[in-house]
Structure formats: C-alpha cells, structure tokens
Length: 69
Image (cartoon, rainbow, N blue to C red; front, side, top):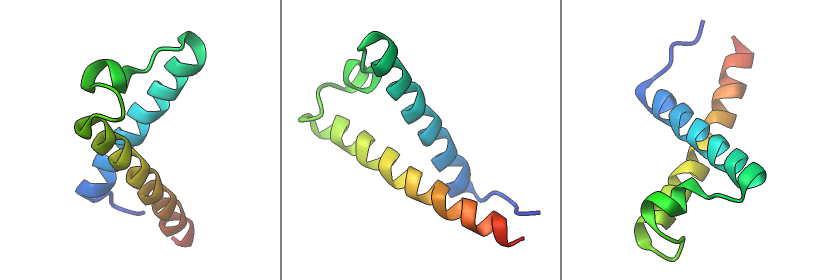
C-alpha cells in the first residue's frame, strides 16, 4: 500500500478546496478564493490558484503511483 507523503496530503487538501470552490462557482456564482484573497489579479489570489493547479498535477501523478502497486 502506498504511504502518503506530506506533499501528497497537502496537495489533496488543496485539490479538495479547489473542487469546493468550483462547486460554489457552478451552483451560486460565488468564488470563495476571490472572496478570501481578492481578485485573481491580486498576487496572493494568483498564488493560491497556481498552488491548486500544481496540486492537481501532483494528485494525477499519485494516481499513477498507486496504480502500479
């Protein structure tokens, strides 16, 4: 069984936050990241979006790692 590393756990949390944010956008047209950190033109908001995107790639790699086991 694959043991989750710290980076995998952090990535999973960020992907969940991203999924909840997209759900809120789809259901209520409410962007949680923008509400908390400002519009994407704000540096902090852009960094959050970048981290969530990188986390998605990490979760994709995790999927392939666990399939090999």
